[in-house]
Length: 263
Picture (tube, rainbow, N blue to C red):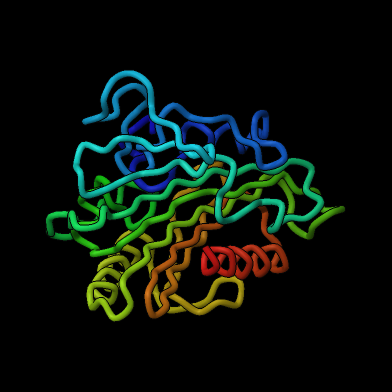
């Protein structure tokens, strides 16, 4: 990511994010590949990924790319053109769509070292206002898997009540069922949303959760966000761009949660 203000939460802010907003390289859910999906949580500009070995990035047989980490407890995978949330499912008939996603998993038998939860940084308009690296994130949350991504579309009023470039950012943290650290992570994230975005209990798109606002990365007036939880996962969503209609908002929120739940 290109600056200290846009760091550490979503895999294509500054890179494919900008491309998807212009839709120059994100049509038909086929975005241009980035050289490093490690910026999903590390937040480093291209070419400065810490701890990575120089040379060729290994590619898996199914077309997904694994990015080396500087700690053995975390393994990161660029999901390529197979994100869990597809823009075409959120905006049928949109003139242009795109999306990317990144998955971070705890390595079996190599738990990440427990670290204190970071102090919320309200200068960062991103998930949890957190500057955690991958291994730090797994260490303080206790999550087994983190999926972060974006789905976007250019929508006209004729095909959808919303208009303009609509973007859904999402982060899912998956825990072992019954792990008490899920509740602690939720409390920490709600506190960050309260301190930095006026967070409070509420609803977005008809879904109850903890809602807040944050700065837009697309030039919109503001971004609406919601944190929801279940027995084994937390999901944070942000609706950027717009203007959004109530119909578009409800469909995007509900279908994004459904697709993440099935992933």
